Amino acid sequence: MGNYKITNATSEESSAEYYSSELSANALFNFMGEYQYLEDTINRMAFLPRYYPENIEYLRISKENTPLKEWYIPMTCFCDIPLHQISYHAEGKAQTGYGKFSIALHKKFGINNGIQPVQYLNSNSIPTEELRNAISILLSDNGQIYSDEALISLSNHLFEYMRRIKPLDGSMKKWDKEGKKYVEIKKNFHDEHEWRYIPDFESDELPFLLYRQDDIIAESSSQFYTKSITETKNGLLNFNVSDIRYIFVDSILSREKLISFIKRKQKGKRIPRAEKDILISKILVYDEIKEDW
Image 1 (tube, helix red, strand yellow):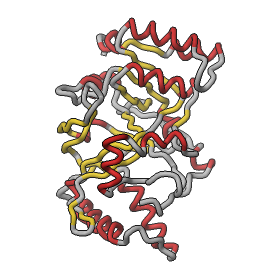
Image 2 (tube, helix red, strand yellow):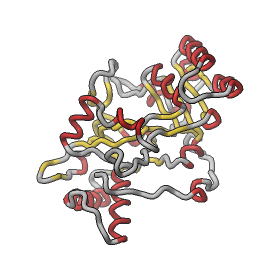
Image 3 (cartoon, helix red, strand yellow):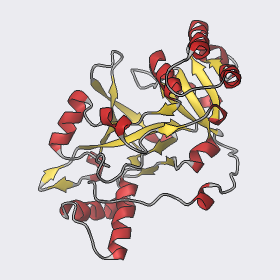
Image 4 (cartoon, helix red, strand yellow):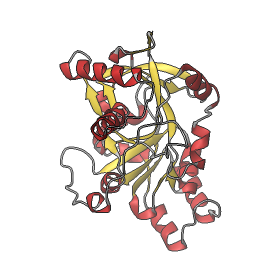
């Protein structure tokens, strides 16, 4: 699945006027389960996507007469849930939450950088049935490169669409609390208001999608492909201090720790001293803010 490629939006398209949201947040939140992930992201001033497993049993598609149960998509996930409703997404129950640490970017930044809301599919609907048929045809072509311009455009569109869909509800894999293995949980995905940043790999860098069993085993056992994303040309989602709307930490102790880290920060992307003060001013303690939601 490395032969299909979409051209980036033009600068004129990416600078289109932004209309603020009335029913959803005007920020895109990426929640994390551990403090260290927050430090790592700020150190890079970039989000590092990873290949995430997606359960696709609801699509009921096969490759060479073998049912496909999952594929892995390189992405960083965000949500635009309003603050007063965010607690279930962050905390959840029975390991369904994503963590109390978060960096929230301005939604306009996300839109200008191609971050896209996913489309949730009713597995019993006609559009899903038609999509199932189209994907089956695409997979049966064994990645051949089309010569007809119309077919190239249609196959590119279908392939990119495949990476931005999700069922209304179902099961998903999530790292356990120790971060050592995936556990399977069930969720109503529509409640997540998910947006995805999917890196724009060059065709000779990394696969755009993992669905072959050997590739899935390599990724699930050692994160073989995820570890290579830092070596790609456009894999990371870079941001500046001005692009950040909020930073959440779980406690006052974590806030003090993060402030100290930002003040002494020497490695990674350089942040001028004046911008460090602005960055620190964006830090909020999740448990304190939650009291006023």
